[in-house]
Image 1: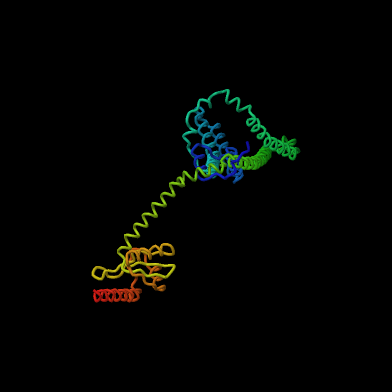
Image 2 (image 1 turned 135 degrees about the vertical axis):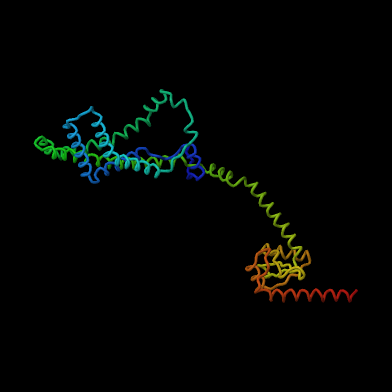
Amino acid sequence: MADNRTEKATPRRRQKAREHGQVLRSRDLVSAVTLAGLVFSLAWHPELAVARWQSYFRSVMQWSTSAQIDGSAPLLSITAKAILAWSGPFLAVAFIVAVASTVAQGMPTFAAEALSPNPSRLNPANNLQQLFSLAGISRVLRSLLPTSVILYLALQLIYGHASGIVYAERLNTRACLALMASLCFGLAWRTAIVFLGWSGLDYFLQWQTFEKSLRMTKQEIRDENKENEGNPEIRLRIRRLRREMVRKSLQQRMQKATAVVTNPTHYAVAMEFRPLTMAAPVVVAKGQNLLAQKIKELARWNEIPVIENPPLAQALYKATDVGQMIPPKLYAAVAELLAFIYRAQMRMRTAGAREN
């Protein structure tokens, strides 16, 4: 069956994989970076190391020629201090580089499922089967490639210094040690470069395999969206309930409105003003387009005056929110509008009383 996992992994898919211990981490890359850091730290002021070891041998010679030699404890103490003084900084550099390269690949994670006891991991038959499986053999073959390259570089280095090695017995001690140190360091930094290149390539291949293993099908994407956002039917019902609540709230607020100012087709702002209890009119509802039409419809249903005044309607809509008093700069325009409404209502009442 064709593989239909064509979609990139979502953040939730990656988080689940991390919780199950499925993370991209290359031990070979950490080892290679640590080795490189250690090798190149050796090249930093090598004369300090030489001076330290000269001091050590001088102390040993002084101790051996001393008239009072009491056991080997002082010699062990001197040797231990010299080893710690020389190797301590390099071990610290290696530790810092190892931790930094590990964190650079991603913060450490503790997956309970991966750490839980699994008897099959302790079964020798399963381990042997993995060792002699196609994946195990391929790992061994991959490790032989950088080893072969390092062996070639070592032979090339020895061949390039063959004359010096042949006549090394004629050199004094200092020159012989310098030649050995030069050969060892030359091979060390070449080895570090090979391992860095190989581990970088291996990490890239692992990254491709890891990303492919996290791919999802389109159906899985849809299912995850349903889990994140809820069932579409439920979302539709929630939207209906929200619209119903907004409609009921709008109806209740419109029952308190004194007047509605409109831009004939786009804006509608409903205001409430009670001269005895309010210092200024308050906006009880406002809307655009369909909501504006709904406000005008409710105003006609509740017999609330609707006045067309496009500049005032736009100014009120942009300057106020529902529940706020109108700004002082609009007092005059609104007062003139309300006065017009009150005069019209008074004339209607007077005309009605005369007819009665």
